[in-house]
Length: 113
Image: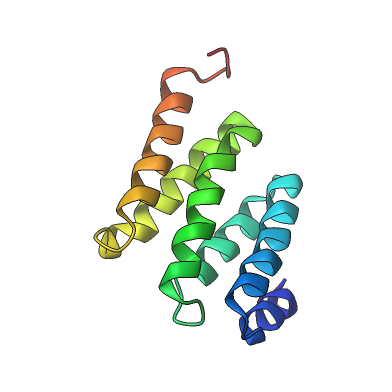
């Protein structure tokens, strides 16, 4: 995963960079792997990713959380909220999307919405 991040970070064209990160995100969502999800979130919040790119990808991630298993969804949504909190002004929409996803799992733990 680190090499995929390095490859995407090196792309200078913003549109291509976003597409590459979307491919990585798709793999993370498909894997249902909490460790990979956390690495993706950490990378998106790092200085290696321009703010406009990280906002878009974290928004996509928050919107895709519903595809994860309920326990995984809950843990990842909580992690996103915790990691974004220090920079909540920069990531307000993404924070709201993650909070909505987290609340839907907490209030409907069996996914029976």
